[in-house]
Length: 305
Image (cartoon, rainbow, N blue to C red; front, side, top):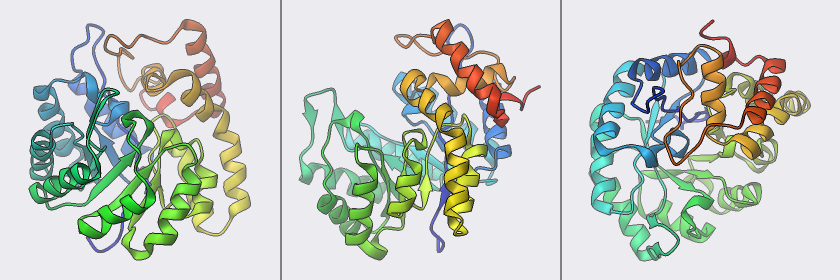
């Protein structure tokens, strides 16, 4: 890879049947819809893919399906997070063999009390890098409960040559991105934000070159990036202001269920089922989501009709 990955890399949802089984045909349709949304790449098996509710066999099935179906049309990032370094490395090996463009990992954690120290985290990422010779993205998110300081993130980048990408979605993302970019310089190939792009304008101002939202409305988020890259910050801000109510509703009211609900309403998938102990959206919340989406008409709400 000579040109850094930039742009919009949404998280692919994992569709289930109404009975909770994998919907493999629906997964293919999700991927096709996302490519038609104009995404620059796709991330699979992330938290918004309900990765924590999938069996190991299901993961393997989905890695093979997603990489073979996308077939190089866009780069695919495969999330390989696990508390066990051995399992994370094996997941990385499988993803790289299937054709993944990049790996994404959270630091090792388990529940509220089991976390590695900085030496353990460094060794964890280093062993994953040894197992799979492709770029690695560190996911710095509240879910892990791990404090990844800017100096430590820079240490990871300097000591592990393939680790050059960072998805920052902590409180104060823009400030952390700015500090990371200023201190790291060329060491930081890809400063991305996440969390449904809910702080995108501030993060772009801080130097972010990519964003990783859900697959709900990437076709409406992408123009924000394009305006900003072309120096039209005012147009970017206007485009973002138009879609921010839907992004906010997704982030604060719905979480990962929003994309599935809109894709089911848009005929992309047959069911918006999530796996227990997650529950379906309350009917009033669902109605509010579809009302906002109906006003903006993202492709996910129209693709299958």
